[in-house]
Length: 437
Image 1 (tube, rainbow, N blue to C red):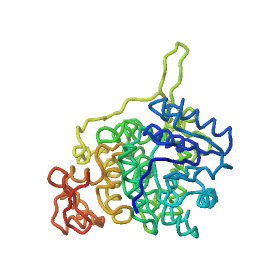
Image 2 (image 1 turned 45 degrees about the horizontal axis):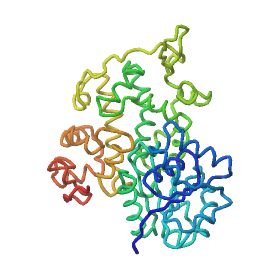
Image 3 (image 1 turned 45 degrees about the vertical axis):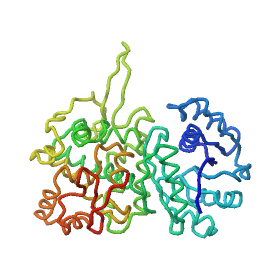
Image 4 (image 1 turned 90 degrees about the horizontal axis):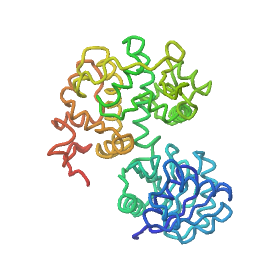
């Protein structure tokens, strides 16, 4: 059975649903957007037309969007792709899918847009037709801007459904499609949230034992290691401590026993206190940083000093960019190098131990981190740049276990995970394969 997607019904018009509807309308699709009631629908259309940024590039695309309320679910009949994008609550999604399954047409592709709820939990006990026709479509926010689209099949999802969704995502929406497995937080958020949550704990150690300021920590965890300029604390300010707390609690429930991430599913005391008093980040006017307006109209940036427990003028990083390169920083024998090895090195080793658990290959993991978190290089590309032989030697010297994919490379006699300019990658069976377009 060949399935093609030309029309889309989006159920739920919040930030993600509105973004998906707008992106599909911009791509020339007929779109049906349903929300709880007329008031919610009106708010959704305002997000699409006048959000920051608007969900469409071409205002004329809005003409392709029809709207309605949840009491009109029968209108989804005839649409090629039914995309559920309601709140991140398992029972809410299950209740909705019971109604959608009764209303949708035979052959339609169905997806749930979730960042962390396992698909198996959503479809457990559901009709066989739904279990065959459904995938997770994990878009990153804002949908119009972010390139990554993770597609996650269930145990019974048929290949043609995955193929149709991937072809539409890449060909019609222009997304970078990554194939993930039905594990907690999939690929991008599994590694990215490990980096952030472990980062709060490891940065605390670097502040107290290494004397690094918060500004220096953010400067080190940006351009020197090929990450965005927000750094660690700045990125969490953007996301919100409340969101990170939700993620941490979900990881605590769903991470496998023995997973290193289990060590970091609660906040350090200082961040716990911040979250409890509602100091969540940009959305509350300040988290780790804030910008205040002076009487003369100028603006001043302040830092919430986690160790002193109060606000102070933001300072300049003490050593920003002094090492010049990723390997220069990681090789440094000072406090900055120790911190980089602890946080960045730990994240790379964590990623290298997640194949085949979260992905079949290094390519999907590297692309997820580049396209979803704007890392300049993915974890395996970074290991190649640092020198895989050197990483193995350090682990052996420290008596640390080799992560699964590093063992594969060592046993295959490979000097890295890519060769011939990246045109080939090392598979988990130790053989070289052509890197997909």
